[in-house]
Amino acid sequence: MLDANMTQQLQQFLGNLREPIELVASLGDDDKSAQTRELLEEIAALNDKVTASFDGTNERKPSFIIRRASDAEKWVRFAGLPMGHEFTSLVLALLWAGGHPPKVEQDVLDQIAALEGDYNFEMYFSLSCHNCPDVVQALTLMALNNPRITATLIEGGAFQDEVEKRNVLAVPATFLNGEMFASGKMSVEEVLAKLDGNAGARAAAKLADKEPFEVLVIGGGPAGAAASVYTARKGFSTGIAAERFGGQVLDTMGIENFISVPYTEGPKLAAQLEAHVGEYDIDVMNLQTAKQLIPARQPGGMHEVVFENGASLKARSIILSTGARWRNLGVPGEFEYRNRGVAYCPHCDGPLFKGKRVAVIGGGNSGVEAAIDLANIVGHVTLVEFDSKLRADQVLQDKLRSLANVDILVSAQTTEITGDGERVNGLVYKNRESGEEKTVELEGVFVQIGLVPNTEWLKESGLELSKFGEIMIDEKAATNLPGIFAAGDCTTVPYKQIIIAMGEGSKAALSAFDYLIRTQPADEVAEAA
Image (tube, rainbow, N blue to C red; front, side, top):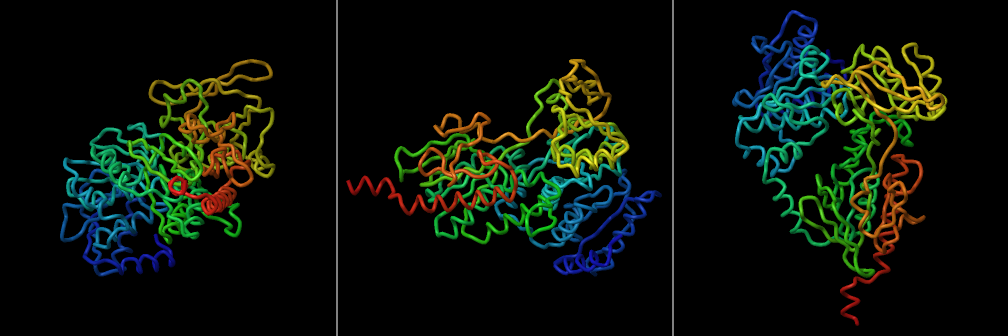
């Protein structure tokens, strides 16, 4: 199961085990069970602190639990093979069960341990899903630190009948005590926030105790990370408040145009951004959603940002880097069937539509790339483009047209996504040339039609926005309000690219530096007068 490189790396990791761990498998007579046995035997052979047994009686086969030998009440179960993107999750589960400390704040571990009640989590993932590992690792951490929490992590491809029965059409999909709990990427802090009713109040109190910053960055994507590093290097007290650190990069799979790096993946790049920010004295405040911007009354004064939890932060200078999100179609059926056939991530959810008929809405690079990717998994792909021609790079169009199981519709306006009440069963479109309406029978719709800036919360701030909701900035990344700068996909800068966002974030930071050194603090101005 493991190649020589993986074997060597895993052996090195297992050298960090502090206590013996047990792997207990429930197996059948199928090939997946044989592969699971092989994997567990290979792991057990790498370290004397690991033992594997195959006498488990769980109904899900193949599956296996990981537990500390001295504390059998705390365990996590993997159903299916946690390879691909989940191999790292498997390694972390082994280490945490064996007493190696996780890289999370102690107050998070204390919060997990303090949870009261019984929580039985079941979570479905796909091996190609780059959003799933965060949820897998969050639930693993919780199960291994509280005996009243169990986590069963299920590879959907190995349990297709179960996936169909529970109507799982998007991953990560998390169930709690048999009921749907959440769909989509979550960190351990987000899971805890949903379970712990007092989490919001504690987070608000924590923010309220903070002193004003010289620079406050709102948004933790590439632009925000770059801005914070640059201002911290200038010696300014810097904070980042982000809804989720990493931003939309976390939802990006292959990145092949980041100059000097031929290929990387979004979650990996986001982790590298977080590590780089961590090298400096930057106060990172994650899971914070901005609600209102209150600009300073005069240059040099304190700007204020109010958050959804009621707390607020102040700073002499603010850099807005709130990014953008996927644009919705806005047609009947899209909201009703979201995660029940309507999806936005072909890499994550594509494997759940194996052999089925799907549509991709959008003829730009993202839409054509999605169609190419899905064509290797699903039975048939229909690409639907509003314009009279595709807008993707020609090399992508050529690749798409070479695929036998793809149809391309242009001048086609999607007017409705239909379903049977449980899941998607079709798509209605209007031919923009003839006006004729037609229906395509299918089981999944992947929406890839561009971005919307995350700026709704700024509409009453006095900040100038474009007709598309983008923050208007000049060549120095300055807004119309003194001391407030903006960078990245939320601004009027064209070409929404990771590398451009990083450059814009750096530019905004240098402009903030110039503003701060040239502007006397308002309270000092008042005293001088």
